[in-house]
Image (tube, rainbow, N blue to C red; front, side):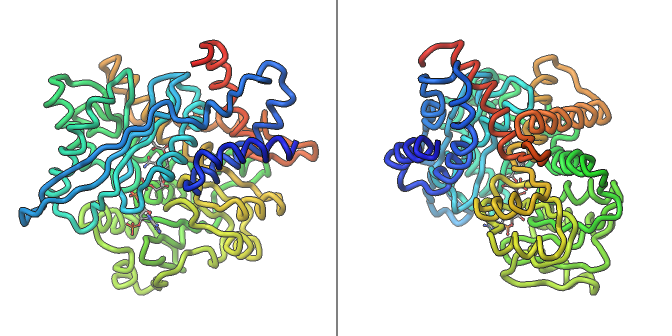
Length: 447
Ligand SMILES: NC(=O)C1=CN([C@@H]2O[C@H](COP(=O)(O)OP(=O)(O)OC[C@H]3O[C@@H](n4cnc5c(N)ncnc54)[C@H](OP(=O)(O)O)[C@@H]3O)[C@@H](O)[C@H]2O)C=CC1
Ligand SMILES: O=C(O)CCC(=O)C(=O)O
């Protein structure tokens, strides 16, 4: 079996040798899905996984825009349309200087499995730009978003490809992008999700990724008769996902002691309560400040410059910042300090070695494609509401979100439970995500 996996990966590396994040994401899937294919006759000899690792379409374009001083800048825009077997391409846009084809292909590939797990009819895609919104004025961000959409609008549509937010793309950016799409196409449609509530957005979409991650952690904890209540939780990041993961942990009686950004992390031994979290939300979403300012405001906190929070003692860890932010040594620190549940809020925040350490220790570990799927699932609910031209209540959306996260957990157990009863959620999520897409691809023929 290992020879089969190695042979497959050799082919992937030959074609994508310069794309380390993409290869990392494919390797993890190959290790779990190739043995499953070998045991299931209908998938044999169809090269389904080989087809799945090749994007259906990879679009790259120039984005030229003018800053407040009249200077012209050029960025690169992308949309990776990875797989449309079960629905229109769906996935976020990332604006960050690190964005390149490798990172977006890994994200688009993960999105295919994640969207399949949600039970909703959504294919997988991802896009973005190496544009850095940090330090830019609102007008500059608007001009960039408008320029970006003048090209992207040719490739998307409510039944073709429906982008949303990701790192660096929040409510402000979605507004500017939507405005330009509407103007060029002269139509008001659900072409983007994460829209404002007064113009087609869904209630709970901003909260959904963070809430969903904690709902998934809750389901995992339940298998060990445990609960979030009373647990100490370490969270990385302080953006959309981290903020609402923290909010849900607090609502469920847990204690959040860290948040971070690319400058370092804050440790508040007294816990980040509702009032302090409201301060963080204002700091990050309106003032666009740095997490270090938290330690200047609250004397109970200490700022650790340039560090990640994985040496802080906790029961539960929720990495919610970015890919490869938690390494093997961090995993060992967490395990040594008694952490027994890790749910990824970010996409691929744990390196492969870190994941192996968690599996070897048999702790509860949820891969992002399962645990952070609540965001895209609620985007799917936003698409449904847009099509029906109705708006569900907060309670209705939250109930559906909870139900979807429970269903994803069940699917992971179905395909991931091992002989000794330990659930390998990585295996479970990969196989459950694969089966639905593979069946659709088989039905649709070789395309
Ligand atoms: N938004 C969503 O609905 C979903 C998001 N995700 C994933 O969750 C993660 C966070 O996204 P989101 O919260 O939306 O993004 P935001 O832009 O709102 O926040 C990102 C956070 O991560 C930090 N961060 C980004 N890059 C780095 C880095 N290289 N090192 C350290 N910290 C970093 C940012 O700090 P700083 O401000 O200093 O850069 C910020 O605190 C991403 O992996 C994303 O793909 C997954 C599913 C859905
Ligand atoms: O809501 C969406 O469509 C995208 C969410 C996303 O980018 C993700 O799940 O990583």
